[in-house]
Image (cartoon, rainbow over all chains, first blue to last red; front, side, top):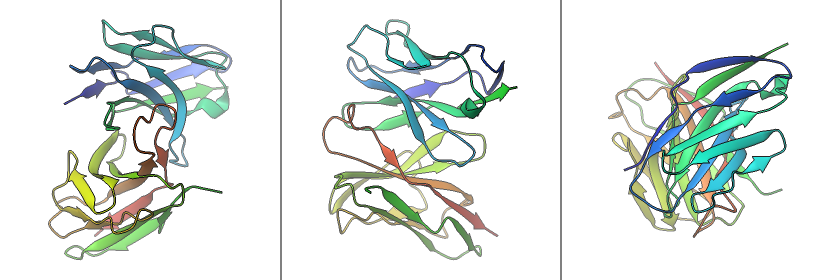
Length: 113
Length: 115
């Protein structure tokens, strides 16, 4: 079974600054997928960014990028130029090749004006 | 537009009653999932189904039941055996095979309160 750990229950950042959310996972599988999901107060789950384990290049989506360290089983999310609309819960998730998605406990991010 | 519809958005029940949460998708996805979310916590898998007429237990299946008679529908029944049923329930779907390029699509959730 896989486990996903997000060690930061809450974080805050000033608008326009950069913040990094941590995620570690444990698995014995060699190929898998990693995701970051955002859950705003509306509670809708929104995909932020994704990474395939066999790709060494870190994924980037506009202001969002990841630092994927496969050997360390670490998958952190960096948000640059933080905006008020980035305020949300952020979940790291691990998906195996059977499409089973395991979530971390979440990090509540508050962007302050 | 394609998507996942969960209804109702809010549901209230008395303790001891069974209640069924609806989840319908028109994305033609083979796989469907039910997750439970408690306040301030992540999502935990209750049940999943990769194909019609087949489903498997997730991490917290006790006290829940599901059916998958149609591709589009995956209703979840919260039975009286579930000790702490009050929670937010999310339904999701994905195409069969690798979901990297088409990761899970989520519904808007149902907030169940049992008193």
